[in-house]
Every structure is written in structure tokens, then in C-alpha cells.
Length: 480
Ligand code: NAI
Ligand code: MG
Image 1 (tube, rainbow, N blue to C red):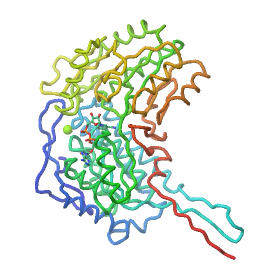
Image 2: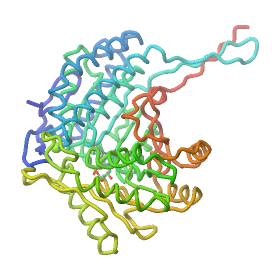
Image 3: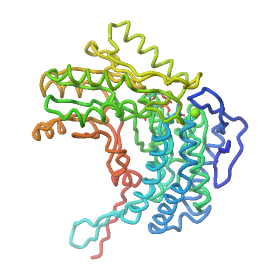
Image 4: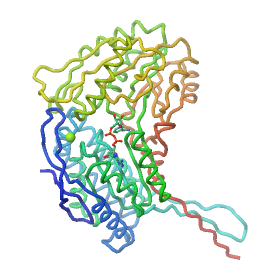
């Protein structure tokens, strides 16, 4: 059974109140989690500080090689627990079982990647005056606060925790109240695997309580946040009061751009997967499809055909698409879709709910919206559901203008066989990642990831992500 406690200083701590956790496929309670308040968050920050300074446990004495070995062993422990973790992720988030399994595999890979990198991270020497030796030390920040969302709990745990630990930090992690059972199991595994007390603290709770207390805590040294731009602003403001550096990963409205010469057979499966994966609740979802007008008829026909075959069902049924995370997200999406219809936007095609799908689930079927007036909300705002918005263009310049026509800039997919155009578009698109003739690159643990504009700033994943959990100290030695 998942723990309904917080992990503070290596101990599982019971909180006064708990929060009921529901399975989104049925709308039924499946567990309870701790509801931490400022008091528990403070205790967790104290514990992380003591672990970092060496007052608690042995972490401060671990060198890079030892951290590397631990991270690699932990990756193996995750792999050994794969089925159990996948089942938790599937039940808790509602995502199809195959996707849940892929998430756990990705989580383990983060620990392998950063385990392999931990002892290869180093500073530099710098030529300066002749009587000086100058070097940079790449140091951990200290206590990293991590506030993560519910859409990919295990993956984002891997992304943030593996990198921060590899660099030598300690952590206070606030998982999302809507889905964190896999995170609690991962934390339990980390303790079993011998992670010293206080190195990883987990404080489940509500955003406005535990999350806000963590962001505002004067004791943290770094903060990474993944979630909505609005909450990102609040968190950044709170952290700024103590000049705490932040990494913000805030979602997107990413375009998939199909030029007339694209290999449609290769592109269309990626276009579909890019929006239905995790029921569209993915920061890097390809939620806009930009199609060159001369192939629009064929593309829309083939897309409609495919969407009409898509099935929604509970995660365990492993259909194309699971439910949304909760009733609030479903109601928000449905009211936006209603407003879109009232504005004359047409639903080109839609999937359906599987017969026998549980009642009470927060299902919204995948759908394609077409004939959308320029500048409409469905082209600008993150809908966070399996809804693809189509836009047509005539030439490269227009494609680029449309691609860059939102405040977001996280990912882009460019589909063309023309090499020059691939490069011009890749350079011109305003986003943190660009995929040419592919999209998403299977998670891309090795690939730096992050946004521009309203999608946020700072980079996670890859070696770049590891560096962002360190800071540089310059040491200038005058040796005469
Ligand atoms: P949210 O941004 O409010 O929640 C993300 C995390 O922040 C959760 O752990 C939450 O507990 C915490 N949080 C909430 N309020 C906080 C506060 N005042 N101080 C500190 N932490 C706080 O996102 P929410 O409400 O769950 O979803 C709303 C929208 O956000 C979605 O429709 C989607 O557009 C976007 N979103 C984007 C994600 C991404 O991957 N970029 C992930 C989740 C949501
Ligand atoms: Mg849940």
C-alpha cells in the first residue's frame, strides 16, 4: 500500500490531515497521502540542510564516484520494481499501461544517465595573469526545492532528483496532490537502497499549503518548478524574496509543421501520438498542426480517419487514450471546447469512449479542431487535453509566423525533405527544442529541454540539466 506519510530526515512522518487520492479512470478513492503544512516543510528543509552539511548521515562525505555508483544501483532497483511502479503510475494518473511502463523505464534511465555523468562533471582552468593559477569549481547549490506536477510523476522525479543528486545536492520535493503514488514508492526504494537520511525529503500536500511554504522558505538554495505559468509566477515571486535561483518548465502550445513535401506516412503517426499521449496532458504535446495548403485535403482526410479509430478507456485497458487527471481539468477543457463550437470552430473528427469504459472516469475523447479563426484561444492557450488545433499556411514565411505566433515556445516538429528549409525553420522557430522529421524523440533523456517565453527558462535533461544543478565558484591563486 502506498504510504500516507511524508519523508523527512529519513523517517516517514504522519501529518495531522491527509488528502484523498482518486483514480481518474473511475473517480474513486484509491489511497490517502499526507497533507504537509509549513511546519513539515520547514522540518524537511532543516533535514536537507543537515544532510548537506554533514550533521545528518554520510552524504557530505560521498564523493562523485560514490554518488555515481548509488545512482546506477538505484536505476537497477527501479527496474527490478518496474511492474509495481508501472501499476501505481497507471492507476494514479489514469494513463494507458504501456505509457506508464515507458515512464518507469524513462525514470530508471534518468538515474542511469546521471549516474554515468556524476563523476564526469568538472570545472575548468582559465589562463589569466602569468603569476596566477585560476580554476572554476562546479559546486552543488545545497538544498534543492523541487515542485513537480501530476502528469509524469515518475519521469519528472527522475529528471529532477537524479540530476540534483548526481551534482551533490540534497532535496525537498513537493509532488502533486493529484498523482504522487509512484513518487512515494520511489522514495521508499531510495531509502531501502541506502540513500543517507535527509538527502531526499518528500512533502506531499496541496500547492497553496506545502508548495507555497516550500517556495517561500528562506533555507532553500535552488528551486525547480514544472507546472502552469500562473503558479510558476507565484513560485518565482516567492523564491525571489530570498534571491533563490529558479528553473521554470511551464508548458507549451507546440506546433507540428507539415510542408507539402513531407513524408506523410512517417509524419502522421507522430502527429497523432504527439497529442494523444497521456491524453494530451503533456507540456511538450504537439497541440497545433500547421499544414501547407496544397496537401491539406489529404492530410485532414487521413487524420480524420485515424482519429475516428481512437479509443478512450481506463489505463489498465491500455487503449489509445486514458482519462484526464480530475473533474476540474475535464470541466475546464469541456467549457473551452463548448466556447470554441459557439465561435464556429468545427470538430473535424473525434475518437470515442470504449464500450465498457468505467463510468465516473474523467474522459474526454481525442479530437481535431478545424476552421479556427486567427488568434482564437484554442490556438494560443494550453488546453491540456487530447485536442489538436489545425492551421493552414501557404509558404515558409507564413509557417514560421504561425509557429511563433504564441507566447509559448517549448517544442516544434518540422516535416520536410528540403534540407535548406529544415535548417532555416530550425533556426527561425522560437522554442527550446526542434525536431526535424520526428517528434519527441522518445523522451530524450540526453537532450536538453526547456522553454522560451511563457514556456519558462532554464534547462533540464541531458548534461545541460546536470549543470543547472550546480554553480560555478572561481578560485584565483596568485603564486608569484
Ligand atoms: P499547477 O501549476 O498549479 O501545479 C503544479 C504543481 O505546483 C503541483 O505540485 C501543485 O501542488 C503546485 N502548486 C500549486 N499551487 C502552488 C503554489 N501557490 N505554490 C507552490 N506550488 C504550488 O497546475 P494544475 O493546477 O495542476 O494544472 C493547471 C494547468 O497547468 C494545466 O491545465 C496545464 O495547462 C498546466 N500544467 C502544466 C504542466 C507541465 O508539464 N508543464 C504540468 C501540470 C499542469
Ligand atoms: Mg490521482
